[in-house]
Length: 504
Image (cartoon, rainbow, N blue to C red; front, side, top):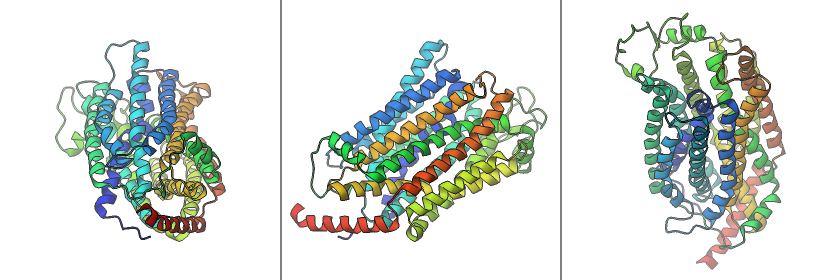
């Protein structure tokens, strides 16, 4: 059975919703932990709870969402309508989650943070789980699937470039004359409007093509029991748990690495060579105009008076942008690497080299800022090809379930993987705060303490390297290599072709 090639419009349109999702996801990975401790005003233990429980609820809700999506039947398909239905609520709650109520006491403030974060995570699941499953039913062609995921993650990295590169400078810019809380609210309002537009683009440009050989009505429990017997799913579920724990763990650690461990004078000297510094302004004097000033990318001051400046915000954002641009280049090469070596082989190499990169980061001194950026580029380059291929592997796991059981329950596969993803994110952020508090005596009111700075250094490098090593070992145990996936695709294509006359 021939599969039509996807048009550029459909591939680009499909990618838009994941770009939107990453305005929430990357803000959560890079900044949410420090937003709750430094802006919202929570203690480390309260912030850990706010980050842990809503994300664990989200993880539990994902399989429920998978059941709902698999059993949704509309003229738009099973998965597309959820992107439309959640678009407006997503935008509203996104703003509320980064709004700090004025004058509230600790108890109500924690409750507000839990409720808004839980609502945001629930909407994320209701939108992104069906979206992820949609990628598995747009096409059955393995090469087209790899191309689709490459488009998807190029769009993701464009969003990550914007979030990682402009969020902190914009927050600082909109905080002028107000406070950091106001800066966050305005910045997230802008991002929320962008999300709404991107979701609508995906809904109107995507199409579901793959239908199961026969419509089944097995209970969700049976789908889940069959998944537990699926060896590739078990490996990928555990790998996903560790993988996404790395992302949230490293995000919180790196923010503090740049803001507390890295030498501010060395950052200033580096930014001065790029023309991103200017003399300090007289009190009450307006800032000069220009795009970089408007975006908050100019550091005013001298190298010996930087404590209250935006130096770390700018350098951290610059590192994020450089890493993301490199990621896009690596993602562009992922499809060709996958065709030549297979998805598994490329993923194993990428995670192993990422572990080496994290260990190398540990060797850098606080003033070696050029080395930090060089390792950021190298780390992004080796990790990038794994990003779309891991999601393509999840689609292969869904194919394997169909091969073994004769039923296709794509929603359940992606929902359970989503459970592990969200649980990993929850445990990554919370474990960073637990380790910092328990081992390095971290106090959110004194983030510059010597023990805490040591903790930022260790957690962002050595701990991350150990977790990347574990992911590599798990991927080595995954048994669907290039040959196995090609044979599986051929067999499923034959079954669908045989069943087509009966379906007609």
